[in-house]
Length: 424
Ligand SMILES: [Zn+2]
View 1 (cartoon, rainbow, N blue to C red):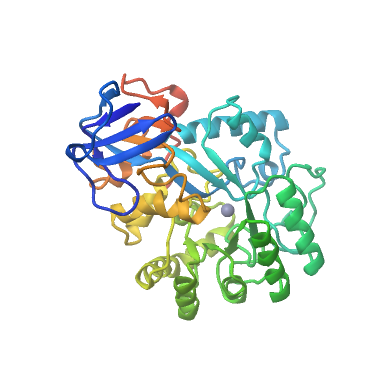
View 2 (cartoon, rainbow, N blue to C red):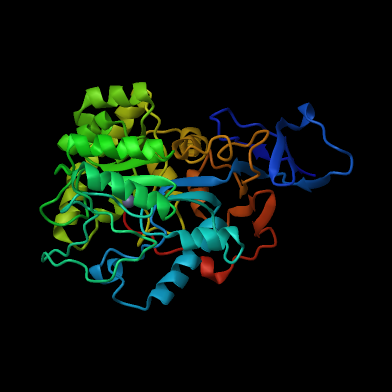
């Protein structure tokens, strides 16, 4: 048994911070957490003094692309280096992401089940993973690998990342089952284009029919998987919400559809705005991407504010991959810029994020019977949310009660140098 003493506790439930807290850990789980004076523990418990630090639940990114290292076609199609080099690059991102306090990450496409197995077996360090494997869309949608000139990707399909293009209800049901067979924890699909999708399939261009989406949601739920749906605006966004997906990813133009926001609040459909990726796309070298990202900016901010006011659960997902790894906590700063309080932003990246993944009984909050996934931060992130982006402030990270990163000695490994910050 160990007891973490003296820190301020932000427990991830949205409750006010608790000064001079105690967190009692037995094995891999938290037994109790709260004001030191209100708790007791066995006399032989190991006492760890964390005065001056803030303890948070391990951070959660609900939308990442851990195996993506750039938007150029040569990167997307894996043409510029051997697959083994790319895999090792991905392993390094996993390790760095954990070292920044991210103990759980949902991958929204591109990471195969082998990385999850390697982490669970202790071969490499990394967060707990929830995998979407690949983005399901019809022909011409964002799951369809087409170059801007119209050429198909000729790289042979990886059986661990099955082909995700499906047309018609029969193929859609089959592809959902195929994803689950290959290890998907969540079903990722897309009913619109996006900022970075091919010219001709933009943020308000629709994909899938009503029947196809109903079958997708029905089959995913029958297999116990949540559906995370990329949908930015227009009829495809309406289709996704009405079909009953569990989360809308991006949702930039939701502010144009007040009835959909009301429906999401009523049904508990989560919004993952992924503000960070649009900061990146606004400076894209591709003119059509830059133009789309700039065009949606104001509506996107209004969407977040309207959704929050309506009681929609808004969670933190970065859409990182090729940008912002491992400083995923920049999304929390974006959420604060969009109108959340720092406490709300932390909840969006911990307790609510765990709910979004269906893991709220396991991770996301610091309370009895949750896994002891914790971060000790030097300073007060409620005063300065950007502390969570800085390796020199993420002092200790626990995963399942075990310390996996400890910078209290002042050592910041060189591999954790932060990437250059792009213009905001
Ligand atoms: Zn994404």
